[in-house]
Length: 175
Image (cartoon, rainbow, N blue to C red; front, top):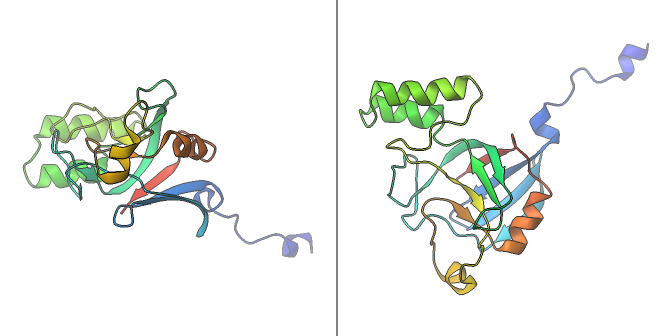
């Protein structure tokens, strides 16, 4: 009888843990719990080169895809920095299949991912992609153009509010 009162299946962890969706067209970052929007941060900035499914070192593009927060730097020159696990396996497989990275680079990325480590950040696909604040940068520039080298930027106040929701392991979807 007691068994009939228990749910058949516990909710997946991602359904109850906060996650982030970044809508680069609307320039908004949304904190989600399940399919419910908990908080919206408007007026974000992305890479000065726009967005792309495939990014390369120095192109200024923000990579699209599904990521996890891999590390947090609370002493970043950008106030706070939430580093993403970019390049991930999806990006490495796509780049290897199109001969944009060699086997050694593909192996280094895939090995790190499969072992739960931060992927190498110095490959032809670039690295050090994350979500950060402005630091001491001019807020007027942030309001008028996309200025990052591929990251997602919020104001310092917004990044502090976001910090209440996210941790290492938080899922981040960039559309």
